[in-house]
Image (cartoon, rainbow, N blue to C red):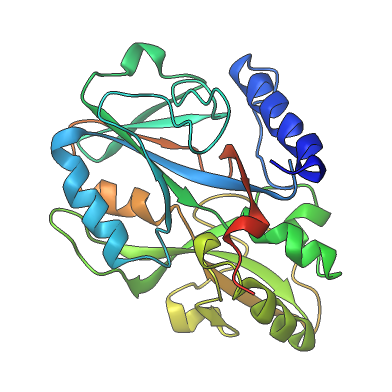
Length: 266
């Protein structure tokens, strides 16, 4: 660990502690800037191989940054004292593909055959965008990012299939080009956009009605820019119908100790 990284890693540790103690329960966009945030999927072991293959076949939507040992709720390679049962602001619980509840911890649901997957998140490149003067609108407006289920199909794997969920951030055309250049350097955070311009071309009919997250303003002359999103697995899980699955609530991520720059491609 470099001396320059020490303050940020102290911040990520303290933020996880705040989440664990339920002092922070909101979205994590804009928090611990410079640290990788992760989408979370927790499944029984007999479903894990199919899901791992789904991630491998869909690396843009599902960029793996960590997988736990069977039954372990620790992921030491991702951060100090991470506890997957407590360190996410809000969990969604699915049974047979249907969301049945949301909760602030899953300690009493944890099973000794569970496997936790952590996927890269576009929140991680938001810091680079902001540093370039392209602060995402959701950060400017202090809301969750807008997320939509598109008509872009994923590659099926085993029991998992479905369409890609995308995040949207609006920019003036010249800024959109720069945003594409910047985010291309972050393949573990979904990389370059999948689409920009006409939302209807990817099956989105109304930008003011996101499927997940919050609506943001789109100003005159701006174009919507769409990146793949780590909520994509939640659509695949809905289709696969495992007996139990636990995910993060959209926009409420796991804060890791991995630096964004460690996973960027120059």
